[in-house]
Length: 76
Image 1 (cartoon, rainbow, N blue to C red):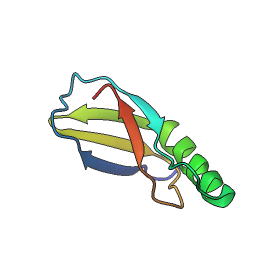
Image 2 (cartoon, rainbow, N blue to C red):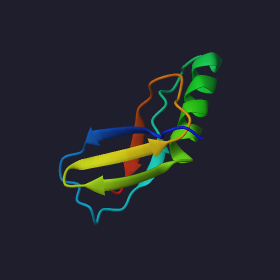
Image 3 (cartoon, helix red, strand yellow):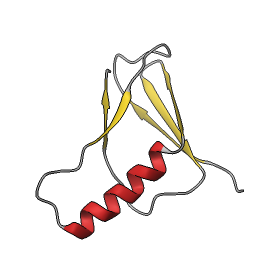
Image 4 (cartoon, helix red, strand yellow):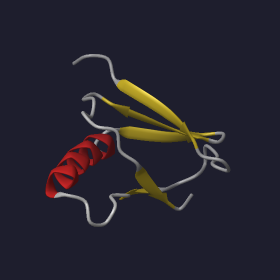
């Protein structure tokens, strides 16, 4: 396996003790192709690891998604 792909995003108010559930943020009414690409990337991200810091969330995966997506985090 290669090095993991890591991305850190800002989430104001989050602390290292926060807990959340990842949710799809796919917009209603998108085409089937967009839905398939989103679901593939979402699956990659949610199969990796994530942790919170002071105002941040860091995601780590070993396969890089081929498209950028937005995910929801319930509980933060």
